[in-house]
Amino acid sequence: DIVMTQSPDSLAVSLGERATINCKSSQSIFDTSDKKNRLAWFHQKPGQPPKLLLYWASTRESGVPDRFSGSGSGTHFTLTISSLQADDVGVFYCQQDHSPPYTFGQGTTLEIK
Amino acid sequence: QPQLVESGGGVVQPGTSLRLSCAASGFTFKNYGMHWVRQAPGKGLEWVAVIWYDGTKEFYTDAVKGRFTISRDNSKTTVYLQMNSLRVEDTAVYYCAREGFDPWGQGTLVTVSS
Image (cartoon, rainbow over all chains, first blue to last red):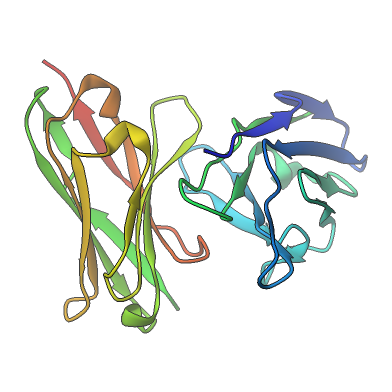
């Protein structure tokens, strides 16, 4: 199984500042058939289901603000929030859908400093 | 717009069974694979199972293999999760999600306790 490891486990960032979350996979999740990195990012607020932010490592889901961006390839990926807003608090998860089981990272809790 | 609604959760004793349902609407259900994902209280997300759009393939996480079965009825636009031999550690909110993990349902809580 592919193990997804996020860092840090939690972070506190001031409003308007940049937040960066890292995600590492135990093996490459680059799909050679469609040349896509099979990596998604989700945001979950308390009491709500997760919301898809980015897929293919860097493609924003429709309606997601452009302050969210993703980068990386192969085994190392990053989610960046360019200017933190109050609504961005919660838990962020990365997930691979390269091969089942489609494992999630352990989550990163983001708070306002 | 696409929508998923889970049902069937509840409180059950260890060793018993439960069947969850996820009713889909707002999209062509038969064209999409469907997932179940769970979240234990205060914990992270755990992917549970997937079924192909036509029902020809299923995959499971190791923790539920041999105990859980995912199925679908395209005529009813519903995906199911049959959960047998339930364990305390299966206690979680169970979400269904469409292929691509968007959208998700609101989840249904399964509590396994003696």
